[in-house]
Amino acid sequence: MPTHTQVGYPGFHHGVSLLHGWLPQVITFVAVFLLIVALARFTRRWWLWIMPIVAVFALAVVWASWTYTNDEGLASDPAPKLLWIAVGLAGAALGAAVVGIRSGSWWQRIVAFLAIPATLLNVGVVLNQWVGYYPTANAAWAALTAEPLPHQTDLESLASLRNTDVGTGRIVPVDIPESGSHFKHRTEYVYLPPAWFQGDKPPTLPVVMMIGGEFNTPKDWVNSGQIMQSVDDFAKSNNGLTPILVFVDSGGAFNNDTECVNGPRGDAADHLTKDVPAYVESTFDASADPAKWGIVGWSMGGTCAVDLAVMHPEQFGTFVDIAGDLGPAAGNKEQSIKRLFGGDENAWAAFDPVTVMRKHGAYPDTVGLFDDLTPPASQKKMASDPRVQAYMRQQQQVDESKVGMGGKDGVFDTGEVGAAEELCSQGQKVNINCTVHTTEGGHTWQFAAAAFTSSFPWMTARLGIPVAGISS
Image (cartoon, rainbow, N blue to C red):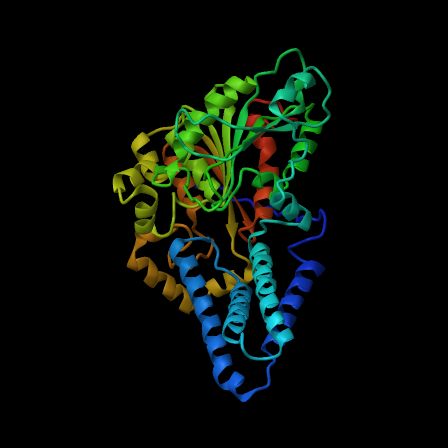
C-alpha cells in the first residue's frame, strides 16, 4: 500500500497580499458600498418592481455560474460560498445599472455603472483567494503587464555568459518548433542553473518538465507559484547544480484545457513528447537519457505528469503528481470523452493512466511521487455525519466510473481514498515505485509551490545529481 506522510506548507509574504490582509478587504468594501448606494432609491416603484427584477437577475447569474462550473468540471474543490455571494453582488450591480437606468438621480446612475467593475473586481479577488493564482499584487501586476521573469535573458545572450559566475540561474524564453505536433503554443521558458554556464561548453544536465493547471500560462510556476527563490536557494547550496527546468505550454491558450492529450483541443501530448525534448536536448545540450528526464505537474498538470510517464517510460523515468485527477478530465467521464477525444472511447482509453498501466505491464525504471490533499478538519467532521456517508454510498452506487473525474463526480470526497492512492496502488501492481504524501489544505498554488519545494531535492537526486543527504 502507498505510504502517507503529513507535510505542511507556508504562505506567501512577498509584497501586498491578494489572499488576505487589507487590500482584499478594501476592494470588497468599495464594491459593497457602491452597490448599496446604487440600490438606495426611495420610491415605491423601485422597491415593488425594480428591486425584485434585480434580485431575480442576480440569482439567475449565480445559478448560471454555478451550473457552468459544475458542468465543465472546472474545479476539484467545491467553491466557497463567499464566491457565489460575490457573483450575486456583481449580478445585482449589472441588473441595477440596466433596469434602473431611468430612475434615481444622475449621480446614482453613475454609481450604478461604477458598481459593475467594482463588483467584478471583487469576484476576481474572491476567486483568487480560493485558488491562490496571484498571491500578491506584485505577482498580478507582473503577469498582467507581461513583465520579464526573474533573471530572464534571451537566447542570444547565453554565449556571452559562458564560463562565467552568473550567481543565479537564468530563465530563457523560447519558441519551440511545432514540427512534431503542429500544436500552436505560446512562448515557453527554460531555466538554466548556474552550473550550466561553467566551463567552455554546457554540461549534460537532466531535465524536469514543469506543467501547470487547467487555466494556465507557461509563466505560472514562476509568477503564481513563486518557486524561483527556493530553486535559487537550492542551487546555491548544491554548488549551482540543479536540473534544467522547462516551463511548457500544455494548453496553447489560457482557457484551453487539453489535459495534455491529443484531441480536438490540439495535440498537446505530441508537443510535450516530441517537440519539447528534441528542442531542449539540441539547444541546451540536455541529457537524452530517460532516467535523466522527470515531470512535475500541478492539478491538471499532475494528471499530465502521471499520464505522460506511464505512456512514455522510454522518455520519462520520474514524475511528481501534485493534486492531479485519476485521469484526463473535462467534466465527468462521458463529458471528458466527448470534449477531449471527440467521443472516441478508444482514444480515451489510450490516455487513461490506469488502463495504460494494466496494458503495459511491468515498469522496471519508473518512480513517482504523489502529493495529495486531505480535507480540512471541518470537512472531515462533515464526512463523519451518517447522512453524508449514506449520500456517498448512494452516489457511488449510481456510477462508479465517474468517481474521481475532475472532482465533479457528485461524490463527497473525504480524502480517505482519492486519485493519488488509486493511481499509486495500480502503479505498484506494475512495479512503479511510488509514494503518496498528503497535506491538509486547499487546492491552491501555495500548496503546489510547497509540494514542489519539498520534492525538488528528491527529484534532483533521482535524476542523477548528487544532493547531500539524499540517495538517488
